[in-house]
Structures are given as structure tokens and as C-alpha cells.
Amino acid sequence: MPTLPLETPPPSPHDPGPGAAGERATTVERAACLPITTPGGATIRIGTASWTDPTMTAPGVFYPRGAESAEERLAYYAATFPIVEVDATYYALLSTRVAEAWVARTPPDFVFDVKAYALMTGQPTEPKRLPKDVRSALPDELAAKPRLYARDLPPELRDEIWRLFVAGIEPLGASGQLGSVLLQYPRWFFPTGESRDAILEARQRLGSIRSAVEFRSETWFNDKNRERTLSFLADNAIPFVMVDGPQGLRSSVPPIMAVTSPEMALVRFHGRRAETWEAIGIPVVERFRYLYSEEELAEWVPRIREAAEQAREMHILMNNCYANYGSTNARELAALLEKELAGGPPDET
Image 1: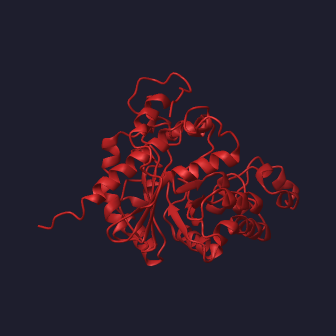
Image 2 (image 1 turned 180 degrees about the horizontal axis):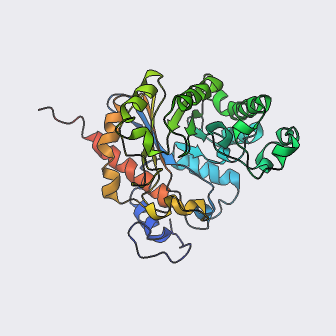
Image 3 (image 1 turned 90 degrees about the vertical axis):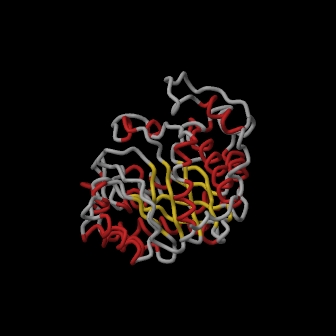
């Protein structure tokens, strides 16, 4: 489809602008629209970590002209990809009414992966983002704070946050369209016994809802902790979220291929824009403004194939959601995987 540039981008092969990205997408336009089934019977779903970012919904970038309402956009997205990650739930608790609308607007085999609310993973939120009933129950000294952490809340309000989150996503679970809840822990979440207990508590609070864990601190994977981290997740059958992202920073996680649950494996692609990854005071989307080359995507094809041999289901989400960068790369990666899998298993020597 024709695309329009959002702005004049810097001359970089990884940030060529939506026009150039859109031209690449036309060569693999339908590659990711259906789940991929591997020779071993695993299902691979590929999509993006947003469908509503303003840079993505700008006219002519990803959506066809005329798809201007929330209903039309989600319907178009769900006809293009079989999975999406919901990141809005990190900032505000989802209402059942919204979840019911999503179910009504998507095919029954379309899947939503949902990011956990900030307070559920040790991250802060502003009091104004809390549900009205929770906000009104806050002690005055907490209501006056600019930011709150779960540890600040009375136990009954912490319990209520978890209850509301689970209730909000219930329509997705009831329809069979809930993939997993992403527990993304911050860079100050270090590999301690207390942290491991927090992960187990989160899984317990979610009950039968599947969850997966992503770390944002390199300390989980240094020489001392890497084996223990992966063993802990495997012993508890908690899916480890593999990542591709900027390296050399405190929040960098190496691109490890590890499957810690036979049920599910996940990969999130964040782009490799190191200069903005930990920057403060910039729009969030700028951290992910990175278009992968086909060669960079190809690095993951054998890793994904190997992971799919160890798990029944695999979710791959492109979090480089500036404009059409994520959607273009999702299609390109799907095309590479389809080509790889069509060739059958590698020769044994």
C-alpha cells in the first residue's frame, strides 16, 4: 500500500522512514497473516507489540485509508497478523467492556498477549492512573505522592489491583484468545531470593492464566547467575522471554535462546537503538525506532526453529513499533521462517 513519511528521517538503513519500510513490506505482504505450523507440529505466531501507536495509525503508514475507527483498525490488524501484544495494560487496568469489544472485533483464533500492569512487576504508577475506587481508598499521604509502588499500598489494595487485572482480561481467556501475561521486570529487579519469590507469587496470583517473564537487568545473565536464572524458570515451567535488543547497557539482556517451558516460547524484538534505549525525557516510541535488516532477522531463524522444537507454541512480537517498522519486520521474519521450514529439517551428519 502507498505510504507517507511522518517526517524526514536521518539517513540510516535502520531508520529509513515509513515510505522505504512500506516498500519492503509489499514484497512479503501476506507472509505473517496466518500462524506457521512447523514440521514437528508447533505453532508460531508473529505480530507486533502495538496496533494503536500514533506513528502507526498516521494516514497511509500501516492502515488503509478509511480504517480510522478503533474497530476498523483492530479488524484490519487481525486480518493481517494472528497475534498482538497489548501494552496499554501496563499503564492502566483493562476493563471487561473493552476486552469484550476486542473479542467481538477479532477472529476466534486471534491471540492477545497482555503486558502486566506496572504495579504487578515492581514498577511505579501515578495515583491518577489507578481505578477510581482504588484511588479513593488511598490514605491521604499516598494519594499525594507523584508515584506509587505496590509496596506502598495496603495489602488489601494490592490484592484489589491483581483482582481487577484478572477480571479485566477474563473475556479474552473465556474466548480462548488470551495467549499469556507478560511479566516484564525493571532493571532494578535483581536476581535475589526475594525477586524469585515475587515471580512465583505473581504466577500464583494469576492462577491458571499463563504468564511469561522478561528481565531488564543484565545481572540475571552474568557468569554467576545465568545458569541459576534459567534453571529457576525451567524448574517452575515459567516461559522465559527471549529478546533482541541493544547491548552494552545496564538493562541489556543477551540474545539467549532458551526454552524453559514445553508449553510456550516467546521472543520480543526491541530494535538495537542503543543511543535511546535508556534515554530520559523522550517519547517511548523513540527507543524502538529501528528497522531490522533482513540479515539481522535471519540471525534468529535457526534459533526460532530450535525453540519451536522444544515448545508447543511460540509467540514472536516486534516491539520496534515506530510507524510500520515492526509490521514490516514481522512480515519479513515470517517469510524467512516459512522459507526455512519449507526446506525441512537440516541434514544430519
